Figure (spheres, rainbow, N blue to C red):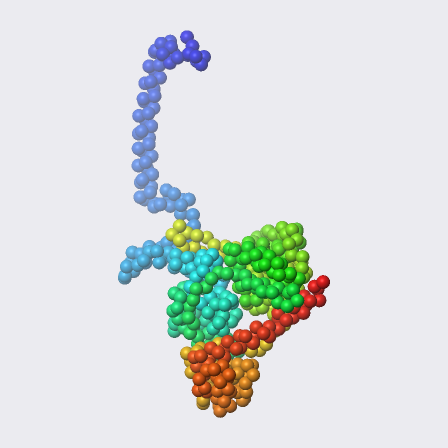
Length: 494
């Protein structure tokens, strides 16, 4: 008899062969019981071997996996079990990761704990409170890449390549850039004291800077004379290209005939924003940059531009132009023949990526190097402008703290800087020698009279602020690099 599927039913099969079925069942029970005895025997044998010869005999693969970490595990266990005080296990792990990354000797790779990681994400996505300066660790020192436009750092006179020696009297030598950032940042309205070393200055420069909210507004535009627009991009954040497109539309409505793209003092930022920005100026299909990994494999990024920018363009760069801003400068230069004006750029030719941990910490590391469209690597060399133009000498004068009093008979680098400022502002302080003599006093009084400040002959507080403000205005009025850019564009504007 068949079931509906065409197979014999179980009952039918059992009825046909009852003796054979009984025999089969007996053999199965015997095999099962013997299997249990064999399993017990093997388990006992393995346990004996394990107790006699250790873990290596039981699981030889486990001992070989990451065997190079044996010293690390041993050190961790020893400290955890035997250190004379209770230890923070998370801190030990953080320290181990931090030490591993520091051993790369790469200023752009760093481990960030939860607080540092939060600060890192803020710096590219929203506003934050601090002084507004991009920094990096280099050879154990904290170096300024560039201050952010309009920030307290810029107003205080912080400049690219300044070395921060200490924060609030405590040395920052040996700290990572993220560790230094946490010491420098703070609540709006609070003050931080920095000691700065600057090339050409024999003594450290002491600055007291009031922290403020640093908005991540990255694009600033203005219309100059004769249809020339100047658009400054201060960093590459999440919405920079969108901001630039808005600025370009605004300038077009004002009859823009030529464009100055100002990348001076731009420390870089997000790679995708740099690629998209460069693509606005580069013909479709032309190379923007190449990214090369350690095996030499190259990924080529090309412009997907539809020809948005049809007017003459020049780009301004300086020693504060780094990373993403150098990507844009090199790309438009080599793939769109747009001239570069200013001085040699910073020279950062590597690409970083960040990995987040579940606890909120993360680490960033250098994953590749980037090459210009023609295959040049500008790392530590920078990009030379097509037209070299320096700013006036007084544009590089050091900051003078308003809290510091400079008076007759004083002799210091700050006095010399003040004398140079007075001279640039049109006053006669006598010999520029760093000595506050009678001629310097008279020049200060004359300056105070015209600025409607109490005539004390002493440089402090409002006098200092007014003096530096006059110099900043003079720099803007006599921006030799912008003037050269306008001159070049006027020859191209039809």
